[in-house]
Amino acid sequence: MTIGRDGVTMTRWRLDSREDLTSFIKNQIAAIRAQVGPKNVICGLSGGVDSSVAAALVHRAIGSQLTSIFIDNGLMRLNEPEQVVSIFRRLGFKVIHVDARKRFMARLANISDPELKRKIIGEEFVRVFEQEANSLGQVDFLVQGTIYSDVVESGAATGPSLKTHHNVGGLPEKMELKLIEPLRSLYKNEVRALGQELNLPPELVWRHPFPGPGLAVRILGEVTREKVSILQAADSIVIEEIKKAGWYPKLWQVFAVLPNIQSVGVVAGKRTYAYTVGIRAVQSVDAMTAEWAQLPATLLDKIARRLTTEIPHVNRVVYDITSKPPATIEWE
Ligand code: XMP
Image (cartoon, rainbow, N blue to C red; front, side, top):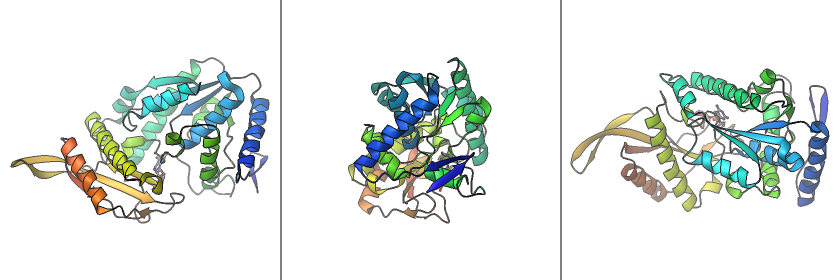
C-alpha cells in the first residue's frame, strides 16, 4: 500500500515477523541517518507508546544528536514524570526534564470548558517546548510518533479530514522544523512489537493510551491542585488493583475520573460531604468504538473500598457502564 503526502510516496511496511522488524529497523536507521546528517534533532517525550518508540528508533540511529524534552504539566499520573524520565535516561537518552506544573495550573485557573482546557494545554505545551528548543541552539528536525491510524484519521492518506488528530500539535509549522516520522506506516500492534525489539521496558510498551491534556480532561469542571492529587491517588489505586487482578492487558484503557460531584456520606456515625470517583474501563480495538468492561463485582468492590478508606476526600464510587457510542471513552 502506498501513502501520498506532500508529494512523498511511502510503502506501508508489514511487521509480521522478527525478520520484518529487524529489516524495518535497519532500513529506518539508514533513512534517518541520511535525512539528518550531522544536524540536531529534538523530540517531545510523553511516556506514550508511539512517541517513545519513535524516539527510541531515532536514538538508535543518531544517539546524542537527539535531545528529548519531557514537559511535566502537572497533569500526569502519580509518579509518572519521574518514571518516564528515568527510563529514558537509563537507556542513554539526553533528556531535559521541564517542570512546568505552575505555568499550566496558573493558566487553567477558573477554566471549566473541556475544549478550552485542551486549547490552553496545547498552547502552553507549544510555548514551553519552543522555549526549551530555542535554548538548544540550532535544531533542524523534530521526531513525531505519528502512526498509520493518525495519518488516516487526519485525512492525509484518504482525502478530506475526518478529524484533526489530538497528538499533532502546531509545533513544526511554528518552529519551521522538518519532521521525522518513522512510524507513519505502522499500526499500533506493530509499534508495540517494534518497541519490544528496541528493548523498551514492557511497562512502557504495553501502557494504555493517555490523553495529551492528561488528568485535566478527567476532572470535570475547574482543575485545581487538590483535585489533581485526589485523582492521582484514586487512579493509582484503580490501576494497581486492575493489574493485580490480571485485567490490565485485557483492557484498552482503565482509569479514574473525578466528576464535579460532592455528596453526603457517613463514617463512624459522622456525616461527610466528599467527592465521588468514577471508574472507567473499556475494551476496544482502535478507540473509535468501545465496550464497557464487565469487571468482576468482587474487583470493583475491592477498588471502591480502597478508594473510600485510603483517600479522605472520597466517599462514593460509581462504575461507568456506557459504551462508545453514545459515550466517549474520556468524560470530557
Ligand atoms: P474519546 O474520549 O474521544 O477518546 O472516546 C478516544 C481516544 O483518544 C484519547 N483522547 C485524547 N488523546 N488528546 C489526546 O492525546 C486528547 O485531547 C484526547 N481526548 C481523548 C482517549 O484517551 C482515547 O484513547
